Length: 96
Image 1 (cartoon, rainbow, N blue to C red):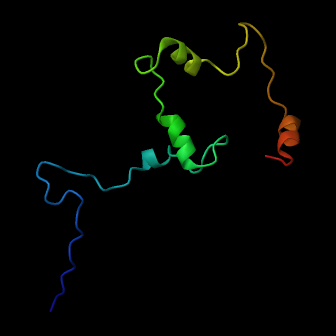
Image 2 (image 1 turned 120 degrees about the vertical axis):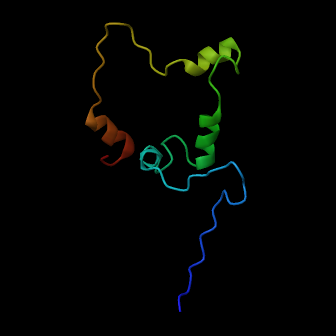
Image 3 (image 1 turned 60 degrees about the vertical axis):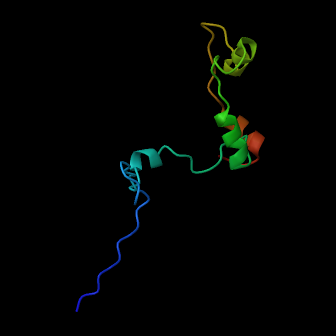
């Protein structure tokens, strides 16, 4: 007497010409964020910013240039000092 285990229903069952891979891809999983980055408090806030298109095809030229402008601009050849650990401790109140 053998009891057969019912087969797990696939997402692509009944859909001809369609194959959905249900395996977890480890290479993609290690690139995904584990928590929300600093300036954002919720996942929704972060996703709104990430989904905003930056290309000049979707935005006027002036807005496109503003969106891609770097936050800090230095002149060519200038020496950029490395961050000091004491500055980070003063701002946060504890060590990072």
